[in-house]
Image 1 (cartoon, rainbow, N blue to C red):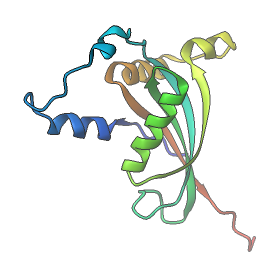
Image 2 (cartoon, rainbow, N blue to C red):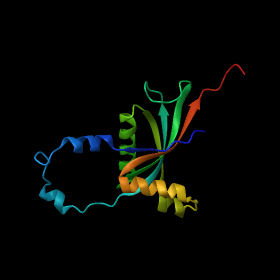
Image 3 (tube, rainbow, N blue to C red):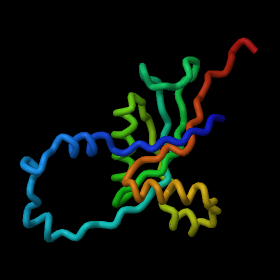
Length: 144
């Protein structure tokens, strides 16, 4: 099992923001100003990856599983952002399973260690996707 920590901020958003100047920044509409901003939360997600050229997985791997912490106003947004970020990193997300927020996981009686809490807080503070663990999958050798 390989442990990897990677912070993947939403490249789509950051690239878009970097290309905009004060002159061409859109002004918020009156409707947007009237809507209250929804609070972000952090969701625990497991992403199953297939293979794609340039994905960075070991050559003999058939895919991988990623443990991610992603911020979003709801789980659906966290999943969309995670998939978008992974695709910009030349990865091939096939399936995403959500395991809820910190509060939801604690309500289920799960123990969350300090390292995991710190990664969740980092994802929230940076409005990002944190890949906390990557486990490559390998085909079983049929000859044994």
